[in-house]
Length: 503
Image 1 (tube, rainbow, N blue to C red):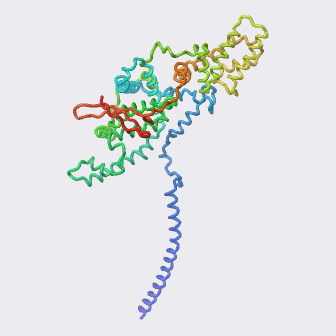
Image 2: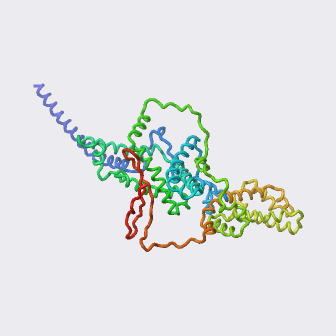
C-alpha cells in the first residue's frame, strides 16, 4: 500500500517537473528567435562590408605593402623644381631632368646593362639597319634619336615596375588566373575523347571565354598593337607622342621584335616547366661564383655607341644662338613655350652686366647704375619670392645678396667674386645641355631650315585615317619565312588591305 502511494506521488512529481521543464524550454525557444536574427544581421554586415570591422588580432603577420605606382609617381613629381626650387612649381615642372631624362637615377649591374644593350642592338640590326635604313642613309642621327627613345621607354617601365606590389599581384591576380586555367584544363580532360587532342579540347571548353589573342597570329598581333597604343601615353615623351609616324614606327618595332617573341617564349611549355621546376625544387640554386659588377646608368653604353664626334652642321651651340639674331628670336619663342625664358634672359643680362662691370676705371655714377642693376638682378632671379627665380646654390645667393644690399662702392666685388660667374655657368649649362638638344627637335628649329609647315592635303582618290607597317615572322617546318604586310585602315570607301608583298 505504501509502495503504491509512493509510486503515485513520484509520478505526480515527475509530471509536474516535466511541465515546468517544457515551459522553460519554450521560453528559451522564444528568446532564440530575436537572438538569431541579430546574429544574422551582424554576420552579414561583417562579411559583405568592404571596410574592415573587426580588429586585426595578428598584427605580427601584417605586411607593409608598397605605396603603388600612382602614389609613388606623385611623390616623385613633388621633387623640387631645378629652376626655382619650389616643390609645388607648375611653371617649370617640365624642366625637371627626371621627366626629360628618367634614366638619370636608375642604376643597374653592368652585366645586365650589357645584356640589354645586346638585345636592343639585335632589334635595331634586324628591323632598322638591314631591313631598310642602310639603303636610305648612313647618317646615325635618326638611330641615335631612336636609341634615346628606347632608353626613355625602358626607364619609365623600370620605374613603374619597381612600385608594383609583387605579392598582391601574385595572390590577387596570378594565382586566380592559374587556378581558373587549371579548372578549365581538368574539365576538358574529363570530357576528352580518344580521338581529340587535349589542347583542342581545352580551347573548346573555354568557348566564348577564349582570349582574342589566342585565336590566330593576326589577332595576337592586332591585340599587342592595341596594347602598345594604350601604354604609349605613359611610356613615350610628349613630343614623340604627338608624332603619328613615330608612334606607328615604335608600335611596330616593339610589337614585332619584342612583344611577339616574348609571348612565344612565355607560352612555351618547356620554359614554363623549367621555371616551375626551379621554383619548387627542394634544393637551393647554386650561388654564382662570378664577382658582382659595378652599377652603371641604364643603357648608357647603348646610347653612346653610335654618337657622332663631329656633330651636325645644322645644330647650333648655345653661344652661337645667343650671338645670332636670326637664331635668337626662334629660340626665344621656344624657351617661352617651354616656360624657361627666365634662364635665357638671365644669361643675356649677366653678359651685358659683365661687359660694363669689367671696365678698369668706373666713375661713381657708373657704379651706382651697376649697383641698381645688381639689385634688379637679385630681385628677379635670386630672391626666394621672385617669380622668375632660378634655383642657385645657397652660398651664391648669399654672396650676391650681400653685394646687392650693400654700398654701391661694393659693386666692384662682382669682378673678383666667383658667385655671379658660378650662377652664369649653371644657367648656361642648362641652356647648352638641356634646352639646345630640345630646340634641335622643335618646330621652331625646323621652321628655320624648312620654312613653315604646309597645310595637309587630302587625296581625291581615297582618304585614309592611318596606316601601319608590321612584320610577321612565322616558323615553317623546314625554313623560316617572312612577310611584309602593308595595312591601310579603312576610312570611307577604301579597301581594308592592300596587296601582300613578299620579302
